[in-house]
Image 1: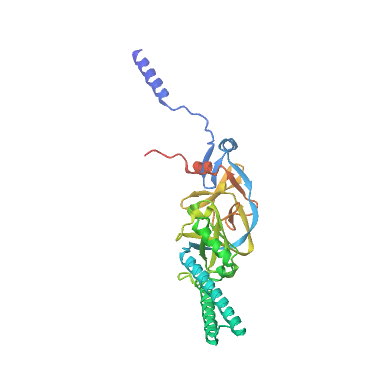
Image 2: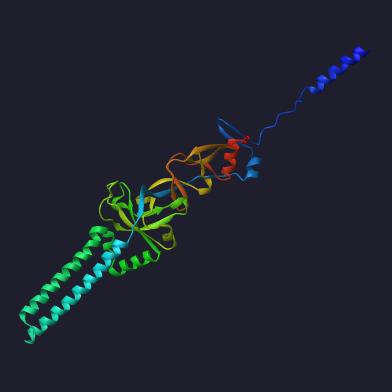
Length: 311
């Protein structure tokens, strides 16, 4: 009897030690070779929203760089131009005065008139040379400005209300229409093109253009700073618009999630994306009809990576 009781106790303990089998439940979010799977309830809870990609046309662009110029040498030339023009004006007036006196047979010798004429000619030549230095050293873009406009530009730069820069990009040339800057990855700054710059860039061997940024953005552009730039050219190219909220930055690249099924999402690399006014413009990697995740992309990335184990 005791032996029977012992056997029954061992069997009962063995049965209790076995794990209880329960029906398996589908995970709300999981990763497979086909992408990230996330059920509808989890999508709603985490705020995942997908929208049809928008086709747009954007100006053709080339990549280059902008260098904020030190306008001190330009200010010195501008002052020289002003002084030379004033001297030339005074010389011309003196020549005319002596010429009038000589014509009236008053106290003005022929020698004095000739000397005044020579001085007026020399002062005029110096004023012309000073004016040409702006075009020769800084480019035709500044020659197009009137003396008053050039003086105002220098005053604005000195007061921090404007920044003058030279922009270079291979293949841009005279087709450049607008310059877009994004210093420090912050808000986009638009620069207005003044015209061609003087001389060639020693590295790119491009003529370059002069551009100006006005307003509060100029305070972000101190003299000497080098910034990556996009130069918009004439004409447009077709592509697609990606909202900034759709972009995921990871693994040293930019990505978007594309809905491939009711609960399936694929992460795709964004190649050749460039910033435009409403977000990012791309011409490859996505296609018409794609459903792009515009909200909650970070939740999909977290689901794809899975829980992080503590070390």
